[in-house]
Length: 277
Ligand code: DGL
Image 1 (cartoon, rainbow, N blue to C red):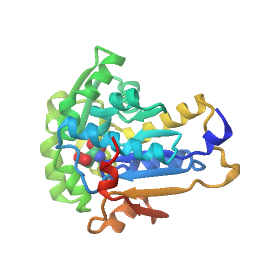
Image 2 (image 1 turned 90 degrees about the vertical axis):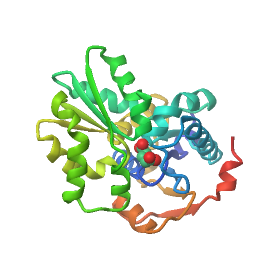
Image 3 (image 1 turned 90 degrees about the horizontal axis):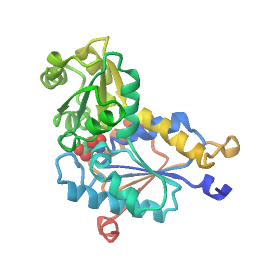
């Protein structure tokens, strides 16, 4: 691969702003890489939409990123990874990495008693993608999963980690009281923001797997294998953010997710996005 390719940005997309947790993990691990993030804030949530719709949106965003000349695409959204990854990989000619496989691999490695739990949006859980990825690695592992649809709005609202969140979590995570996993996959971009309270409810012996962090490691591996890592002569990477809408409290939520203000932010009109196939 040429030097030019290594200097191109990594494209990352999500249904909204939650995928900034994955951007954060990539920046921590690969500070010299340039990133182009796309958050589909006009059409979030994906977790309750049909597979056909999520696949169509994922294709439009990937075409947009490819037009921006990215060297690879990271599907940060668990829902889009679960239902659209295969179709994207078949349609586009650059490496496309999702979050399901890296998260599953990490969970299988860390599970001592071969009992893994998965939480995610309704679509992610319904797709069975985590279950299939884990079973492909070890068919004897017991997998228990639970959809947690109320968690995304609580994080988006910046709801304090108080009794309300605890009560919602206790209700969802009760599934795991009977099956007791030793590793729990946080199978949604928003869940890392609830990590401390999920750990409290699950108890200290359960290992929490952040699919975003694992994906950053996978991105590093894929780029290294292809000779496309950007060492940047010591310069930090540039990070451009694109969204399809500026929702209320946008700046606040986005910079909270990133841990600092966003450098460059652009809005893409939905008609422009919808013109892509
Ligand atoms: N980004 C989505 C995911 O990781 C969560 C939000 C949504 O439902 O769109 O599954």
